[in-house]
Image (cartoon, rainbow, N blue to C red; front, side):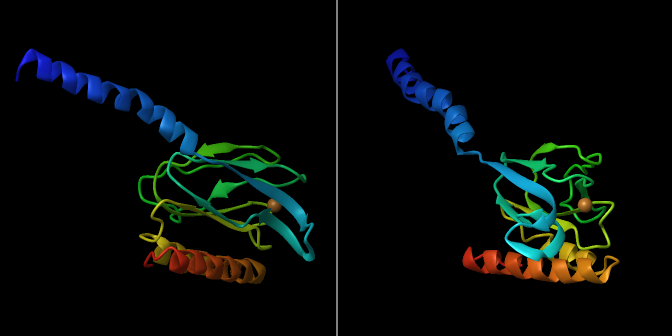
Length: 167
Ligand SMILES: [Cu+2]
């Protein structure tokens, strides 16, 4: 390759390399989940994460806001994608996660784990471990937890169908 051609190649490549990280950074989304005693939109719903399902892409962040006291957010053992890090916030602690591993994550509030306080994060192409998460979530203890999991899993199935993802 002649020097001139190499030079032209570099000129074409360099701007792309410089712009790429900025483009990726601009595309990430900061999600928020509120930890609540009562759903302000439906007072009959108690002890919940709102929204209960977060649709995210790799590189996005999610922050759990302690809007009301007495809650935490922690991943449920075995119900996160392979290779993803488990997380565990303290009571009233606001934690921010950067979501890198694609898949479905189930998490709960420890004090209210049997009172339906469960939520899900969907990252990228999330359906690979969805059957395992579904099975595990529906086997959790607590009638209200099972009922909330069923509602949220139906929401997840609708998202997967709308996006043409199989699971
Ligand atoms: Cu709670």
